Length: 601
Ligand code: GLU
Image (tube, rainbow, N blue to C red):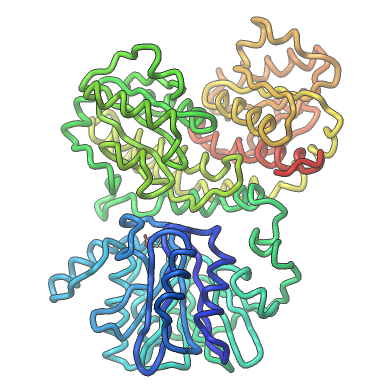
């Protein structure tokens, strides 16, 4: 995820582009850069760190005046967040400049091809290969739009690309596949942005593009085509948000925006994970297969929501690999003299990669000679730097304080780790692993189908504004989901909330149930009869004591209907993957209830 801006018109492009980047900085702040077309050349500057670093550099070394330009704020996925990896990237002869949002999955093969024909690449990014390819095509065809169409046909993965050609000061060309891009339509000027926030200060007229389309903007025109060159039309619309809302994509809170970004975040976290032969690959694993084969115990350390992701991971890893897994709060880990050996793998889960307790815990583990693998959302942060290997989640920056898309993408990374270990250790057949990856790849659609029921969940929240306390029940992989649902409510709605393993209820907590108390119940898929039926009994039990049961149960599960005061339907998915869909209504519920109670989410 990153912020992308393009401009052609009569204003100073530098100012328009930097202003657009400022509005998009929430999308990425690893580095920022601009490229302008001035006097038949590309003038560009790019700096690691926040946009302020670039602005300072531009104040010190003014770029020439220009009315055509592009810009980027990066959320690094390939290569550290430093100056060389910052966008824009230039082609071999500096004729073309390009910015990119997304992941080009086949970049390694393309890079090898370019290097074999003498290209020297200056960065570690997947993006730079596209810049080189684009320039080669522009040199061949003389036309940036045609070149973009040709190059896009060669790329796999997700990308928005925006480019300029130094020989054509009048146009900016962009393309999209599975990454966002909108056009802003002005008077004698036109804009491109990752979202309308990029240009909302200049125009509220926008145009939406379809997948696999190329758009060329000039000061007076916008033309759209498919990757195959066939002419196409964009959809014009009027934006009725103000500037503040635009930064949040029309949502009231970053948290809500990020909840709705989850299908995309999960899809991005799954990109590029399979070799052409269908094997699972984890780019920055850095631990050898030999090291992994020796692992006989895993300790997952994490805090808060990440800890609950770790609890789900335990079910998946133990099931698929038969390696025993402990899950431990980072803040407790160091103080109990944990048993660590060279064959223990410590997995540290941290969205930011900077969580102090988790960092201290991995340092302790490494002193004991254990191998450490980080699961992290922030490229180049301290925890992955101090670990032996890392699996990056590709959620994009998480601004909302309560983790949502961070949690879902951590779950994805945990599943990938479990499957990778199963592949290396041979505890599961390749086709079985492939089947689970296929199921994971369907999850973005399933998550979207849960989000489509948001209005029903909000209505439930409205019914419960008076409540003082909420309980959450789950079993198996649904138990950590119950804990996470309760945590969300505590941290943003300031409500008393508790999550319980449903089977534990009778050992005391059932005394808490009183008339009308809302209890949210995560019902396991029906295929798992034993688990499912036990859960249904638990629900009857709390209802008999007057609880108001709100059941999250899969589509077609009618056994639950007589005992549910309210029902939210979940798509049919395997039990181990159910947390990816079951947590979504709980996030929506917490966000809405907090809003209704007047809290600053
Ligand atoms: N994959 C590209 C990179 O790592 C683009 C990331 C982004 O979307 O900011 O530079």
